[in-house]
Image 1 (cartoon, rainbow, N blue to C red):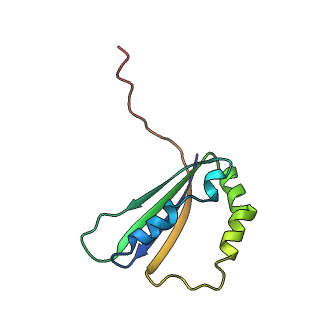
Image 2 (cartoon, one colour):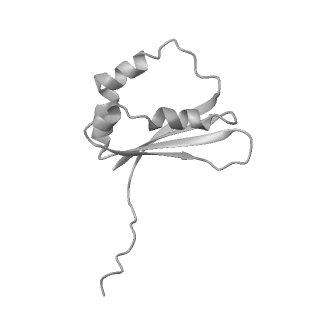
Image 3 (cartoon, rainbow, N blue to C red):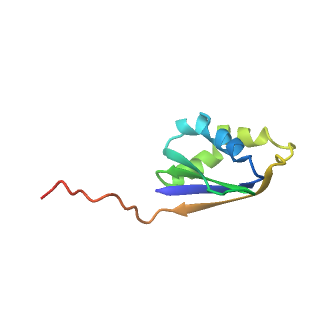
Length: 110
């Protein structure tokens, strides 16, 4: 399994804009090897907010195919020249190879 991570730091009250952007149905769900995506918002009382988006792929090869796909490239080309939304303070990303996954123990077997 392979995971792509993006972390956004946004001004107070704007986490929902990132959540909405990545929650809407898109073409990624149709990509071969796409498993799922998880969107998390860090619990804070006030101040800047943090949103983490995790996208799980069956393999690094599936992720690379998505990155090189015409649909993905077209989506980024459409945004060329547009300024970054003012509420985004910082964004960073990374890709990770999953080495192990723990699941609940099956206690029904005696």
